[in-house]
Length: 250
Length: 259
Image (cartoon, rainbow over all chains, first blue to last red; front, side, top):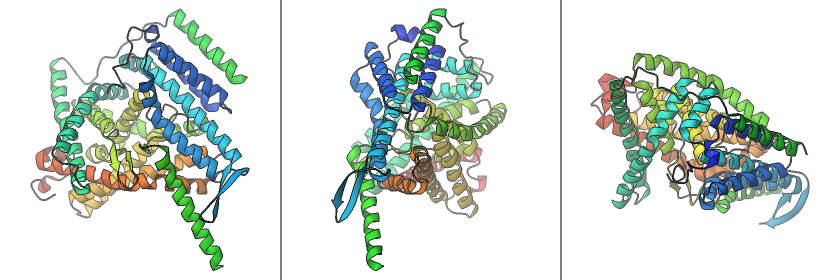
């Protein structure tokens, strides 16, 4: 929960930049990160994103929590590439009479993928902290993402905090009553927990629909209409993309 | 010949042990379902997105039709997306791997509202997770939709329908749907990962190693996901059988019977 809102800086200058501009800059840099053949550019992007997050006073612990999952997958990929892919053998170890070899080319390719992951995820983390959800939704609408998709996203975002709380409460109650003492009990408890959440989803959706209909809902939700993009935002964004592109080409 | 065979078997066993061991060494928590941002090269990211688009478009079309008939349908789908979001973040202990992992959660909406709308639900949950949790990614959004939304939902819903037609009990059908959906997601994710990271190496050996690497978490997790799906359907059947009837999961004559 704290990953979402607690560290969100509404007063920071970066959060006041138009969400469309931020989204386009991030997407442009992401394409550069993904298509880069080395490791320097993604790491530079990661460092820049890290400093921007620090500038927004995002605690490093929260940043680490967010990046830990992608890093885990990247580490698995790195080890797979190192030990099981490549031609150039760096070393080999004898395990139970069998040779397990580490490959130089596999390692380089693995490091390249890890760099891409770190660069890409850092950009996403920065975007997530610098963009209020509702403005992000408006930016998606401007990008011609279908209205229904955006509406479903808004409903989901509105209620997921409630379900996170519910899930935590139910889980604690089950745990306190030894609901997870043993595999069989644990499986049953997980089933009840899931069922309770789905049931709550159904009941809440009916209440929400009733309340919305009373307030004039006819099947479509109003969306934020974006104002024209400020010239300053556009100029800074263009500069960032040009500088990024220049570094990418070097 | 026999010595060669036993050497080959031994090599294979060591390969299995060492790839499985990567999971245990790397972290105390395994997040195997989502492909992270940056893992796939640009061309593969675009390809998976192109594959996902027609499924999302069809799901949106179905959603439009159904919400025209019932004004409360969109809020229901939105809330189900929130539920899927929460379920797919639940840390589930996997004793065989000594880690925690996370279920896909897509079999649940696939059974309740059908696989095509389930693709939309998954796409929404994945986009929010990517942006605000760095769980998945924007460039891997298409690949994650294909594995979790398309394959997971259609596999789960397909198995459920087949078993129900064969008069298999509701809870068992739901269990199998959750199990098959989870394992189908795991297989597809492995295909996507292997194809994306293989470089010049052949596809099949890397695919096999990725499959093996995630066996300790994904095989038991499939059983947990099956139990969760069965538990969900059982609870709804006991407490709100009318909802299951409204959604076409059970026929009116089955309400009040055994699960």
